[in-house]
Length: 385
Image (cartoon, rainbow, N blue to C red; front, side):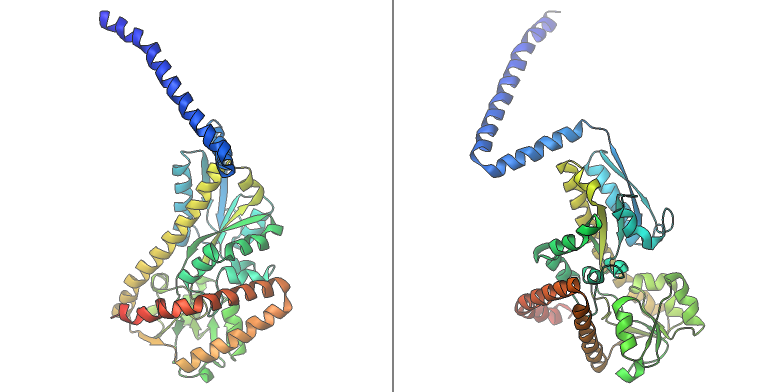
């Protein structure tokens, strides 16, 4: 009993001590805030953060363009949602639906735009019909690889340009994944010169398909689930999908002899997170930052996962199938590159926004050229040995 009394007697003094200490700490912080405008902004952000802790949890809906539980791409979006919930201590929960589960895959952009859902995940070139310049924020033939793409977006002004272009659609874009350099595709016959592309029926979408058309081939649009049967039955002569990991799961190594590289059409395809502008801006600063950082984590995870899995499954393809791994002849690559440049220049002439982005990309490429030549390009041959 005596010990208990002493304990109770000490409580007020402890409270007073803590209260005094906190008041002193707050006073010191206020002095710092008064001395620096930047600190005032930070203090406002902290105030928003504290307000968020007292509110109820927010529930968002995300829809992807990928089939449900699609390896790496769909998994990456699930990882993003999980990280947001963990980092926000449950204040923001995101329910993810695969393509077709909630809305058709290619209606994701419009659904985010009109606020039917808060988040979408896909690739910017899917919306090139309404925004021709969107191609540049996913992949264009002979464009940036993954590292260059991240550099351009995050530190080269590309992300700001991307946000500017999506602003009229009420959408804020975030980089959230990258496939890395893709493979050139599966062929039933050899490609030894540009002439071998003439009359070639190939499953290849986007700008890569337009380049093939100009080279005398015929780009065919076929869903991923239909590629195997079409290639097996001779409906098409060749097909590109993504890379060794996904190609192996579809069994292309069992029906096509020649596996060509590199993926000139998509040297580093960025995947995007689409967030409804009003929904994002209604979040407190702390949750906005969590969404931003979770997207960038997904961006890194997907690229890393693609690289690891592709290395593993390339070995499986070569060892298990009767496959000849071939590089495109330099003559073919130069012809494809020249045709690509002509196409991009024409598209830039037809659309002011495309011209603005194309000019920005070219300027950034030129700025980085000297450094890339004495860094990445110079060391890469030695890293492979």
